[in-house]
Image (cartoon, rainbow, N blue to C red; front, side, top):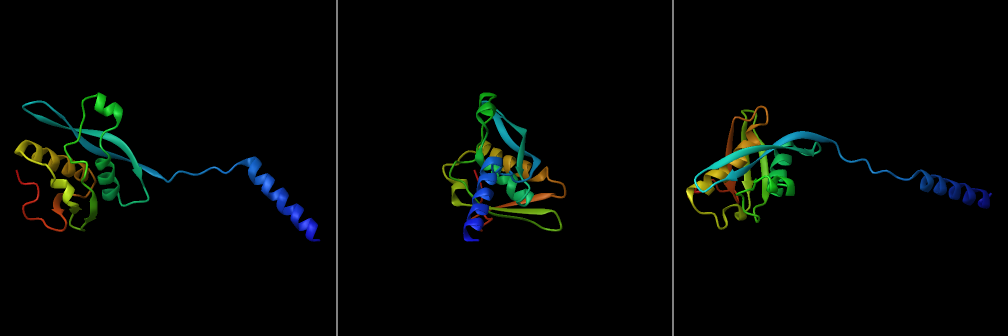
Length: 152
């Protein structure tokens, strides 16, 4: 009996190995994130399509995607991000009234200067959140503080 059980287990293992195990990717949803194309005088905010995880709240998923920056192909097309590489999303929530509150690490403000860059960073974040249906305004904070965030 023991040999029969062992043989049955071996057959099961061989069957699993023969059919292979396929990993099912997590469900994705269509989203938009906003990058910039800049000249010496102007910043153009450009929406790009992305697929983001449907397993995360949409506001969190799009901000995490935004922080990844443009793809190599998007960079070749002249797109960039003004958001510092050291910026990390700490939390994001959306109230029933449509107010998105996004809290970032101190890295969001590291080395940021000039009103054009500050405005571009705000527009990237706000645009990325406000394309989501129901979001009507965005409040940004750094380490939980809203006062003085992204001031030129």
